[in-house]
Length: 323
Image 1 (tube, rainbow, N blue to C red):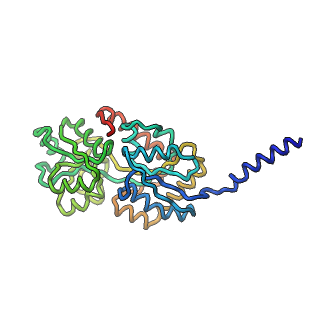
Image 2 (cartoon, rainbow, N blue to C red):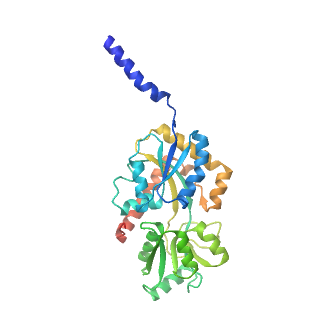
Image 3 (spheres, one colour):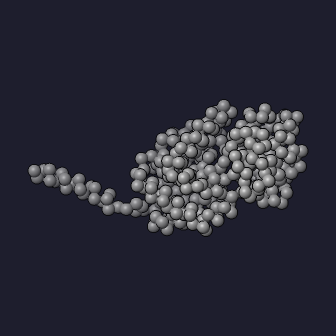
């Protein structure tokens, strides 16, 4: 009997600290798998302050870039499932990169979805002197000038590269894809007429150039027009139905993170997104906050899988390889 009593007391001694420890008991780290200053990093830093207030712990942003975001995402895959290390990824890191690079994790089964955070419209834009003013004219011009045009891309497996390749496949056109380290450099060359096109250009980054007339927009790569540029047709209206590509960002925890931790994180994110000041900052950056029914962990899981099911066959058929 005494032996059983000691065993029970020993078990209680192990369990009690865990029960007494309220999540989070230490600072929370959000791994951003891209360099500082980019749109993923900016979103992480905007959210870090309301999350710090809600979770009552410091929120640290850790930029771990490389290989299309797969290095940073891999670090989170290996982290303890305690909710203290999270990944803020996007389409490139969580759809494009794992289809291209030899990653050591399963992008779907090795992570716990927390919440879809923000979505940005992508566009097809062109230098202002391009002799095409809509997508139909662009296709005709590209076919009349095979391999003569150029389109700037931002990284292997990025929406700009995959979108450009898929456009070629759907329209039977051919043009060069020119890699850039960042969107700013690509836009500068587009404005200067050094390249002809950008596929998958983030709408918020292009808007100032569109307003001043230094580049022109041919289509929004989605099913709905963008309120900030309502005169730009959708890709469906432009005649290339189904070429829907958005730049979305989301938060994940490592596999097997307890549901109560995920729920607490999800609730903190929803609270942050309801803050008018946060919503305005994101809107000013061209980011759209998803509706409430798309903010749950289950909604992110279903959306992420649908994106992979759609784009992995396209990426693999294009033969894209990691650098």
